[in-house]
Length: 125
Image 1 (cartoon, rainbow, N blue to C red):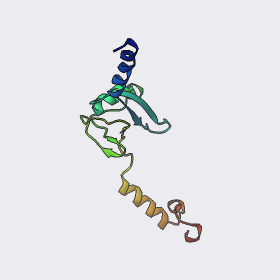
Image 2 (cartoon, rainbow, N blue to C red):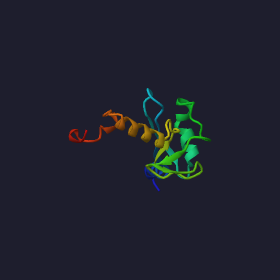
Image 3 (tube, one colour):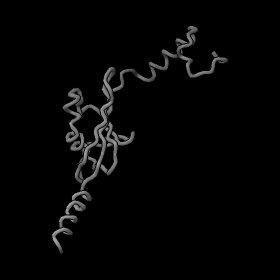
Image 4 (spheres, rainbow, N blue to C red):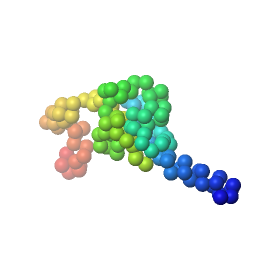
């Protein structure tokens, strides 16, 4: 094989073994969303992808032992293998219990406040 063909064959081989994923984390306000694209080798786990993205250095409050992790909104294990074009999402714990938050909205409606009824049309307020 000529030398120029060998040089052309090398990048194609390495790019075939490389996949791109995104790691996403949204810190509590007033912080902005971190969306970091990273190129990884095939067979990389979710935990390795998070570590290689550098998001743990940007946000030291992230604890992978307690924070849940998902891919496109579905929970995954840290030892799961990432696929090309995955968006790995690191979830924060809930700040309010959804049941309690709903009960507070109902109490505001009963008290006459329109704050809990913003989704309704003006004629129903």
